[in-house]
Image 1 (cartoon, rainbow, N blue to C red):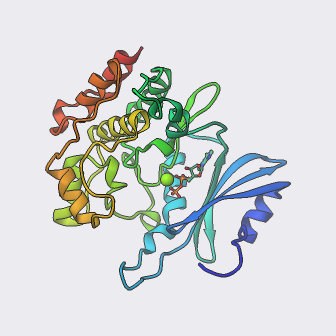
Image 2 (image 1 turned 90 degrees about the vertical axis):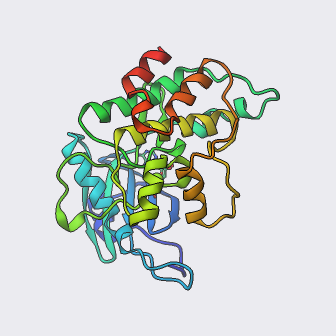
Length: 278
Ligand SMILES: Nc1ncnc2c1ncn2[C@@H]1O[C@H](COP(=O)(O)OP(=O)(O)O)[C@@H](O)[C@H]1O
Ligand SMILES: [Mg+2]
């Protein structure tokens, strides 16, 4: 989508009557706005298909992601959201959560030399947000530092577009093809390499939480591979468990090691993580 700056689809202008709006991001088939309206303060997500390029195949599923997330929010019993279709895909709006994400919040810790042990309060908030989802029988599938918003009262886990655990209408569903490789569990990376798809699990969410805490606390990825390596090469390094030796300082370090266990059954549950942090 090149050309003039994107505008909110008419259907959303009609539904929300914004008094203020700000484009937060527009990338990889997804646009997000912060919208203030008499109805409330919302994150508005608008999906569109990614056209094929010489290097990458087309990705029509990005158009469906907001509606898929809307269906998941509905299943989870979230209120104060809506979803639907526009000319080029689907949209949703949901309550706006104020606050830094985990990576932003821990910036001061990872830039100290030597590293300073982060306060574990934020880590506990992340574990509690993930536990809320796991208790309902769901796996998130795309746990990463940017998806934990640390609010004044509680931490919110956002971007449920890839979550698995209940019925999603067929017209809005699409297969899980992995997430950001930095946070992909070895068994997910292996499955994506072998079949092109994988099944999100709660154990894989725990690995991703461990990798998120590690990168936010230290600035280092869990697995060793060159930044510019092709995606399959990165995935192979993850599947092979080529762990860096870097550890987070303090008691968090030990817990993260357990969360990053190569075998899913060796990882703690989110409840065990919460207990260790409280
Ligand atoms: N409910 C929300 N509250 C506050 N910020 C949000 C919310 N939803 C999305 N955002 C912002 O938009 C960014 C992208 O949203 P995300 O749900 O991850 O969409 P994408 O599918 O494009 O990854 C987030 O990293 C965050 O900065
Ligand atoms: Mg996201």
